[in-house]
Amino acid sequence: MKVIDLKHQWASCTPGGNLNFHRKCMMAPLTVIDYIVVHELAHLLYSNHTAAFWNQVDKVMPDFQERKDWLRANGAGMDL
Image 1 (tube, one colour):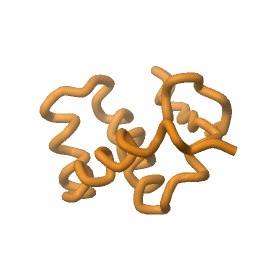
Image 2 (cartoon, helix red, strand yellow):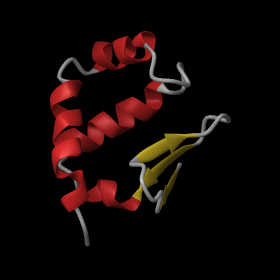
Image 3 (cartoon, rainbow, N blue to C red):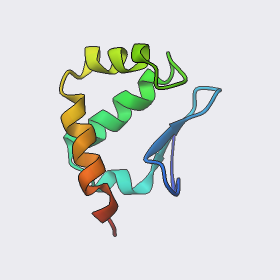
């Protein structure tokens, strides 16, 4: 796992299973950080954003859409 500047992504999962997180993630509420982590962990099972991927995220975090919406609405304003 690495914390780096990913430009326009909050996080990524490499084909080799390495997880990378944008440094700005640390400024998000813990519930949103949890969503970002669950999202990337789901990529260890599904490399894309298919229905199966989102079903996996939903199994772990049924309120993921609220957290995803928060990130979409507030993420651009998070800065040092």
